[in-house]
Image 1 (cartoon, rainbow, N blue to C red):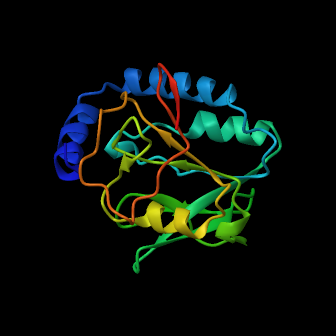
Image 2: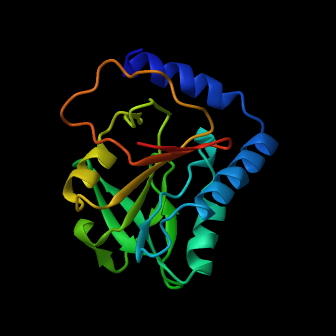
Length: 186
């Protein structure tokens, strides 16, 4: 399937999920993340979920990262299609932007080349580690600026599709994708 078809299909699938299913599956995903060989890392970039879009709730993963005394980095979007990274501290104020994305108002900036692990939002992914996001290219641009050894981890309620047919040179492959049932390694 092509990205456009996959976006439509998986948005519809996600919209059918109940709040209880989202909560339970998000906890399963967090438990799988806990088993991953990533905990020697220092800076963990994680998106804050958009509840109205029925995204994976990243709160349990965020709690695990903080419980392991790691640095949590959260994104802020800018009109030019760029994500900037800010350290999540007790003094950081979070506010929803016009798209409903919770993000920091301001804070301590963290450069892309400091990120060790990036949790990536997505709508679908394939067996080769390619993903379909919302189409803005924010994460592809962020990941291209990151170090080559930065781990890229997608989070999904659904299992992999066989192939995304219209991958291009701007698409950045993930290293892992975590679902409630499985950890995919690419």
